[in-house]
Image (cartoon, rainbow, N blue to C red; front, top):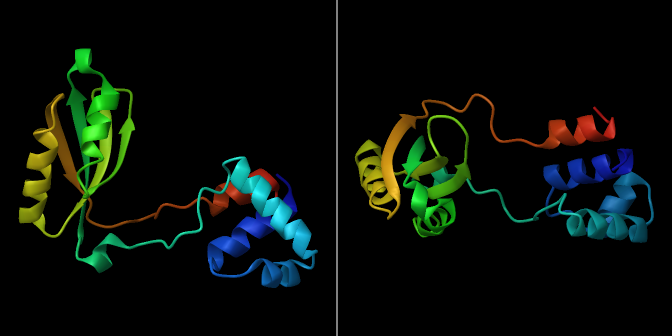
Length: 155
């Protein structure tokens, strides 16, 4: 990655609906250059998508919680992750090190609804125990542009 890649990613992160032609104008490079760079960045897995960023709270899911799970070891993590993926409120699940085996980010409509979601998570075959921490406020939202700037020397 170089500085142009960084500027291209930043532009599409700020304005995901911008077209390739407009991006080429703003970056002062040929349209073919922008398209080739985007194709390479997508092909290399650097850019994973151009879809809308959805706010769960705007959909009525105002409660965010982080749940650590202890998994029954003989069954493994993959079957548990597959079952968790069927629960719409489970936004992410990560295999982790430390005292727990998996970390999930979940959302719910209310604290009472959070209990329903947690009950669904704990009912997943292979989950032995769960511990939950409710997020009170997002201090640093998920972001990747600082990494792009650091990797390309543009920031």
